Image (cartoon, rainbow, N blue to C red; front, top):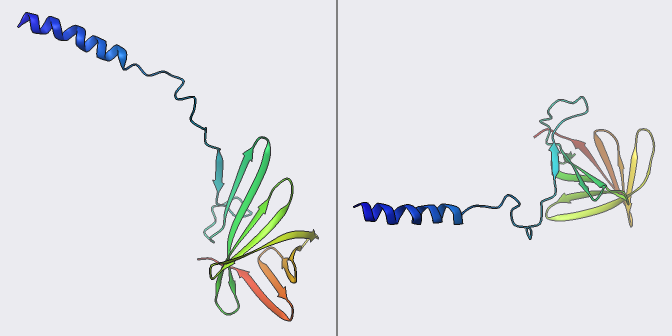
Length: 144
């Protein structure tokens, strides 16, 4: 019995020592980018209106995305994402598996204008007026 215990102790000791993990981890693994998602409205309280916002910083370049749900006058729900990068600001409108991406072309104190070809969107704090040719679609920010 003593011979078995004497043989087992070194084997256990070797297995514990050989399984020691290095503190540095795998150097070939790409570190994930950190991003923080904030869901709040303008007064700093948690927003239940279907609005989400995230800020990502990669190599000192900040990108901000804000997602909102809007409702058209006919009751259709539309997802709108505003993205601001150091190079440009865009607005993407998604409905019926179609996405339209418009670039920011101007802004005033109360209104921001986005355009793409013959489509123009005028964005205020809680509404969007889409104009394409003779068609005008009004979208209002909604709570889900």
